[in-house]
Image 1 (cartoon, one colour):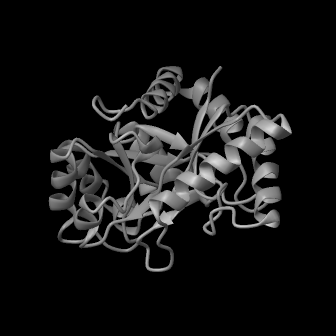
Image 2 (cartoon, rainbow, N blue to C red):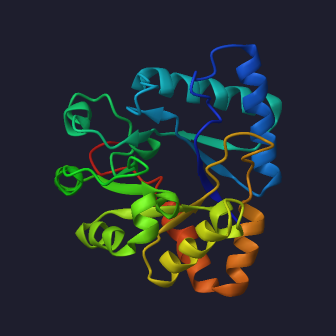
Image 3 (tube, helix red, strand yellow):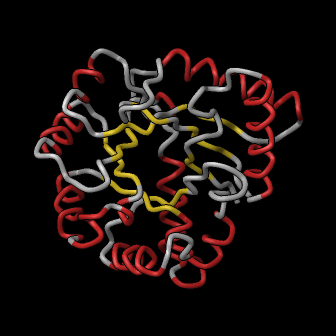
Length: 242
């Protein structure tokens, strides 16, 4: 089975600057393949107050890593993206071409809300993205302090046209009982469109996709199939951008 996976840090927030970063990235690439992953969407943080990555740097790092994976004989496709923090200037940054969509395809944007708030401009930002043909994917809503208490708030954004992505570790209980319970609640309410590893490293935040999908296929095979179809759709390019 082809498995497409989104995660943050295979490029590193330094975007594979040196030998150590490349060795680490290749090691994580091997782990991804071991976990059944065939295509990986690498999404370093953007606009989160700490990191700001130039699009060209992310594209170059992705290309360099892909070449290194091929040379090392690791059968893994890497696609570029960014996990973009929801800030007031997001639309201006997008229009200035400072923000990278998923696989540079112009169709989806990984969107991270502040952990403890839903900014007043959230719905307007989603509206403006949709007007530009870009669907925002709200990442790890099950760990968001407000969504976890008031899932109706997430439902409002989904009804507006946004999508959401849970973390495999949340579904498996790696973030605690409360997060697992919230994850199940969001799944039951059909508020989730994707599941990703959100892996950061090989120890504390590893890939857990095989385990998560085995569990999901036992409990809800139709949902597991839907997640796979949705993930494949992420890689399609908007017409006119080929």
